[in-house]
Image (cartoon, rainbow, N blue to C red; front, side, top):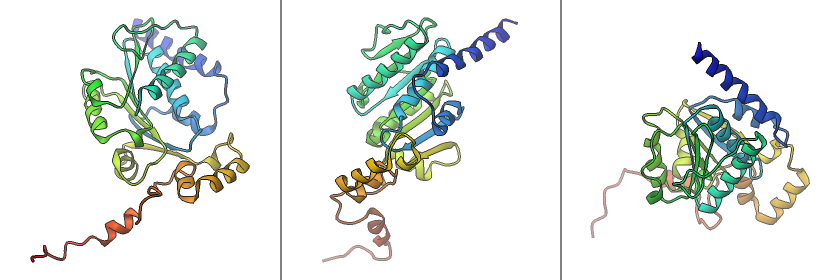
Length: 250
């Protein structure tokens, strides 16, 4: 009986947060929040709201599941701090009083014992965490592969969820590998700037002229283009490699 009551309380908590949001969710954002996927990738345009939506997801996790741990990894302390600031704003909309956990500089602890902890992209700072319920990797294409491989084992015992969110940064790294070759276990969400109702076509044309076609397609069309300073396209280089010849001997 008590278990059923606890589940009912958890279900009721999921609704008020979204009702109190001060922005309208678009269809893609609503899909991400409703998702119960264990592995998810957001390959979405700049200014779509990747961090905002996943901050809501983090607060829902913390508010609805007592004693849970949500870990947020970003390339820098500033970005992790900005994520925690957004999460704190949503907690206040719920009239939930949070505090620091006493151990981590960027952290929110909820009255039910749940925590959201933000960490910079430094492998030395993240070891020691375990039983992570929700692992979020913000600006994932800029996070080093070594760091990503170091945090994945934190989900081994808890069976927690892992979400990557970013714009692309070339055909390399774990973000591209998961998007391109990760398998069916990943829920992939791609939203270009033209799919985002909050970005005007006029602004996008200005951006295209200002930054050039290749960078524009990466930042706003979510394409895994190579850096502007590359002499050859990476696919062209890979296609030119052959194992038909042995080593040259002089």
